[in-house]
Length: 95
Image 1 (cartoon, rainbow, N blue to C red):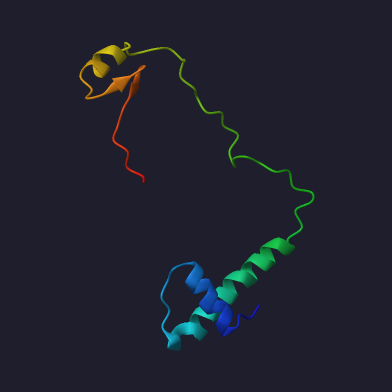
Image 2 (cartoon, rainbow, N blue to C red; image 1 turned 60 degrees about the horizontal axis):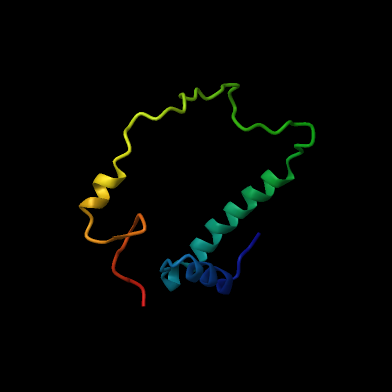
């Protein structure tokens, strides 16, 4: 797949990267090679392959869901500069 100068410049603009005018051809060739690789991957026949979530058949060990810390909400809100109805009040930062 070959990319035109305008396409490479548009991709650079969208990616917010600066490309020197004399490097547009080289970058375009590299991007074309990447797109060709993706085209090869898309052409692979995967109909008979089962999808997998992980290459190894392992199960993640989960810890017990138990409370390990005490509730200190009242203590923390007592020292907060401003609290109302159990919520922390902060200055408005967006106008």
